[in-house]
Image: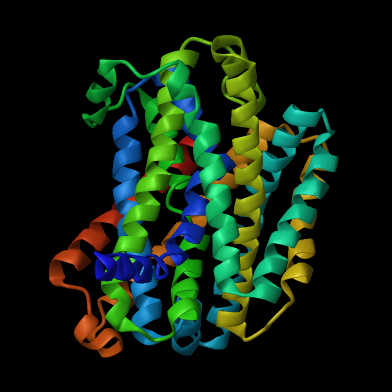
Length: 399
């Protein structure tokens, strides 16, 4: 019994990197798309979340695997394989995607502070930036494991905040029909693409390879533990996303104004009570704080890996915060800004997924840990599906 507990404790110490990456899967963009899907189409698109979570789990495992087997992050490997002009262009697109990611996440934190304390959005954006900087200082000064513990705690807060509504309004048995893949109209395709785009995030792909490498070094013998880490983290993230949709489907269907986060909050308060609405706002706040810190960390990993340029995390936090504060200060409609950020993210997904699949399928690079043919086939199908749906998102949004 004692030896079993010892092994269990030893195993849990290996968990952590995937929980940091999983924050990207429960950010404010996910909240907006998942609640809109439930409110407009009830349980129709549950299957999209299940499929997206399985896809994301495979992608994140391959990213962590790359870091553990090679001892290097995805951006570092690309640095040695791309000529300088392409490296600069690649970094440029990754930087634009990072700023778009930051826009959605800072906006989510600002909206949550507005809901909780009636603060103006620009003031909420500044506070979100300050808090995320404090979170990054934990990583900068105390190391990765304390940072992982802080982010995992915030993930737990997010889970409680977004799943609390299920206790008051549990889903109907009809929810099981949502596991059958189907669409209702072109708008449901657009929303499904947005849900997928908000789930498979480029910055999480770049970051996870560095998180695994920094935590364990070059350690291919930990691949089994990494599979557990990724599975537990992605199941939790998937459960939170599904809870958002189920709450919206069971309690918010037919409500007006639920295409915005403040509208969702108001509808939850009207249908499920002030306590559930308060927990929703707290979950949204934790989501904004944690996701913007993780996104900023990812941008630093890309910059260092591709160009060998190291910028203090606090400095980078200020630089990437500025575009988000400009948008908030200009009075741009928050819902439009969230949609725009998801479209920009869609452009960045192929640049993360295609190299990841190719590199982990390279025997020269991965040696005996090269992907099995079935894994490579699954990864190619996932990348193709994600890129195709995000292309549809761009087209339908522009149209």
